[in-house]
Image 1 (cartoon, helix red, strand yellow):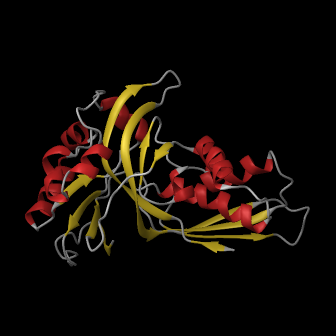
Image 2: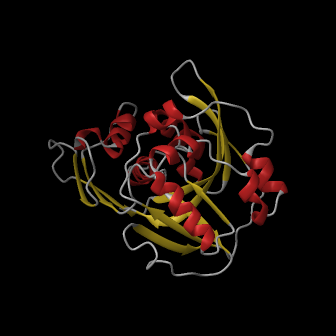
Length: 273
C-alpha cells in the first residue's frame, strides 16, 4: 500500500509557556501543502522474518531503527498482533525545516497500517496514537487547516480561505533542531492569537500582526533566513514567514510565480493552494 505523506506550514506561531513535561504550549495554525514524501508498506511473505525499513531520496540523519515510521509500527504492535512488514520511505520533504515531514511520515504509517490490517481505528484513536509519537504528528490524521494549541496536538476548526494563492517554500541547507530552537525563543502570550488574526484580518494585513516567535532568535543566529524572507517580500509576497521551528521560509503570492532562478542555491517549491 502506497501513500503520500505531505508537508505543512505554520501560519503564525506563539510560544505561550513551558510545560512541566518539557514541552511548550503553543498557539499556531497548521496548513497542509501538496509537497510530499512517498511511503510504501507491504506485508512480508515470511511471518518469521523481521520488519524492515529502507529509505531513498534525501539522506535521513540518525539510525534507521529510530525512524518515526518504525516507531509508529511498533507503537501499534503493542496493542495489535501485527505481522512483519517492509516499509520503504522515499524522502522529498527537507528535514529540520519546520515542514513536518517526519511527523507526517509517522501519521501516514499509522493510517496505512490501520487500512492494511483492517484495525478499524477511527480518527480520534489514530490521533491518540499519533500524539505519542510527536507534538504535531496528530495534525496529519485530519490533514486539513486547523488551529492548534497546547503541544500542538489540541485542534479546533478555523475559518480560512487561501484559494488561488501560490505558496513558495524556500529552504536553505540548514538543519534546525527543535529543542535548541525552543531554548532560544521567548515565551509570552500575545494580544491576539494566530487563529484570531487569520479569521479577522485580510491576508495583506498579516505582515504586521501574524508572527512566528522563533524568528527573532533564529534569524539572529542564521541571517540567511531573514534575507530569504525579505527577498520574498521584495518579489511580491503578500505574506512571508518561517514555518514552525525550522529553516523553511514561505511566501504567499496572489498569483502563480516562478522564482526558482532567484533561489537556485536552495530547495525551492511553488504550489497553488
